[in-house]
Length: 186
Figure 1: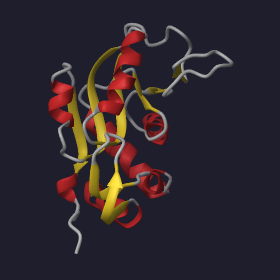
Figure 2: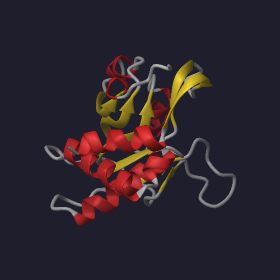
Figure 3: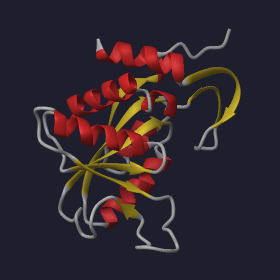
């Protein structure tokens, strides 16, 4: 029921069909998910966070994280929901696309330096196509000493991410896939 409702909200607020849109992966597509309107919708954010925590319930990680910008609202919502729920608290962090040239100059933000060493981390994404973006976050988290074996995405476009992640020793769990939406124009 929660998945179906989240799919409805995504369809209403975040899915565009028709025309050609260039994706981060460099590919073009006739459908595009701009997840920010869903991720900043109170019901959408709540459903998404609950479904992510449900996907992680059997083996909760110490931290969830992801690449800026798309993963930041997902990570924040999951952290808040974990504290409000019945399971363990799950901390969060994000990975910058490039380190700032001032302040701490760190790539990984939201946790003290060294906090991820030896910790179980799951990376989150709003939309996954080929997994190229999330691999940057995986590499940064592993560079901090984190144990990363899983990526959870809100929507998998079903364009190779699962195979690409498997080749790197990572699993992929999708809350929804492109097949859950009507993505054909006309």
